[in-house]
Length: 137
Image (cartoon, rainbow, N blue to C red; front, top):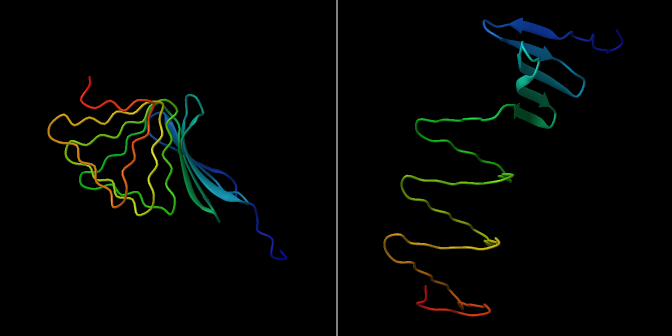
């Protein structure tokens, strides 16, 4: 047919329970949806295009668990929370940055609940504030 592809129809597979898998081929991307048969909402969508793969999850919560290690690796990684971001560790945490690190917030607290706080710099240490209060509560 002169190199034209015949359009492939959407394929739906009913699952036991209240869900279905819908495969939707497209010109720009192919998509796999897991939908609720009750609401029609796509709960999970995988899109594959020339730009790569994208994953979209609908719902109140998403949990990703790994028994040992979970690694996220990318040229650029962005974490964004609309209200609150919590990073927690039951053990130690180590943040290593090859370049510069800038932290900005309305207010900041650095608290050591046990032990010292150590500050070391290869060059100068500068404290700049309206008032510098040492050993005050």
